[in-house]
Image 1 (tube, rainbow, N blue to C red):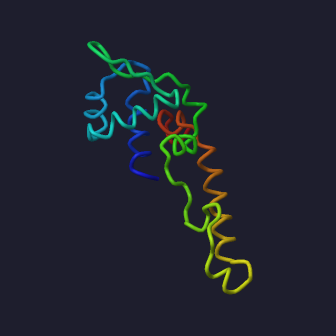
Image 2: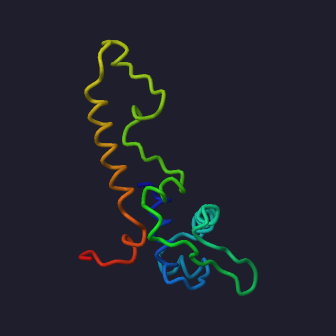
Length: 136
């Protein structure tokens, strides 16, 4: 998981009550650097997860139902690279496979692991991750 996705999770946690909060409140509560928070909030706003109100009395608040947003969705919103290996990228030219003219067993195993990871990321809602106790 990228640092940006981690920060996005923490920003959403700070906003989970649904109350309007300022970026300063988020930074203080979640121990985040100010220079990243606004940039991440803009991505979350474009994805219709949060609403940003500018000006006096402004701030931001959560507008999405986190039950309907998975950790996989958040990584996509953050444009995070989810692939565990470069060979998973579309169009990747495997030098070993080209030299040996045979399917790469390493690639097949990495592909299997990637599918498991993606399935797990899709199975975790942000609501469950951020708001529910571990034993629930």
